Length: 79
Image (tube, rainbow, N blue to C red):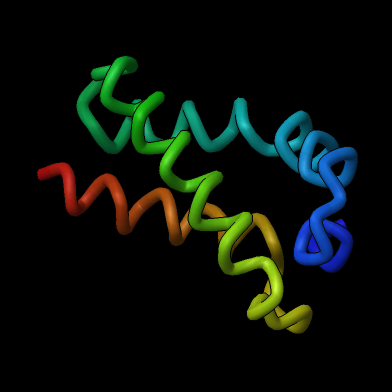
């Protein structure tokens, strides 16, 4: 899917979003002490970074780990 996203496939992006956004939001909310509003902003930024970086993703890494690392780093920036 990520390869398709890197080529501009909005349907593939929507599938990734549907599969991972809830987990990302929960993770960010926990990282940010329950602040769901800020967590939503972080996750939105994460999705922008994912779309921009899709072509550089190395498939030997697990997508979920890569995404949660992006979210964690953005949460740390919020602190």
